[in-house]
Length: 325
Image (tube, rainbow, N blue to C red; front, side):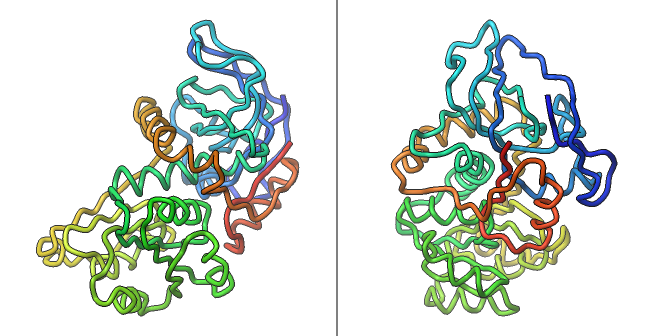
């Protein structure tokens, strides 16, 4: 089969189209004919040699999510048959013509979604849903702040929060992106300047927010602690601005705050299956009926993977960059 291979750690030019062996199918897994995948920051880090794939996943083939059709099933598989349209998360390897995944990690593609649209769902919506509803425990009418709201996870989180009936605040460094995020459910679009925390407090009449989904990290921690209401919850999902920050422990104690770090890729199989189960029970209906939808910046041929990586590194995209065979 064909695959996009990381020839060596480096820039986008190290990605090569090669023929590699087709994966074998364990008893409880399915073989998926991949039609499309979408890029994630983890793919860029893996390409640079900074984020190895978890054990059992290809180390030299990027790709954390897929959409396609079931090509074959293991002997113990009961929920899927060849020809079924599926999408899901994997530890790596989705930039290939075939991928193997556990049957319980795969999700059915809603009938209204194309393969390109479906490929933009798993990482963004599963991550956002887990952060909002498992970690932050977002309830209707609560206020939630989403940093990097124009990203794939950010646009998914904004839509899911709106569907839940929450008031959504979103930050971005790009005025052009902020001008568009209202269509994804953002009530208050805030420029990520030095005084974004003051703006959140002003817009909330000093009350702050019940929860935060932070894909930025770094110095945002100080502002996050300032704007969280009593017993508020912060889900730290990404570290685009760095891994170090100063923390006001007195405020954490006084407000009884919850600061929760999360990753998806390195979780054990049973935890990933549980994330899928919760989304299927609570969020999937919104996806199926069009209440929420993947936001796609552009679709590019898989053979243009290097160009797609280079574009993502400019941070110019709103939503996902999809690669299709």
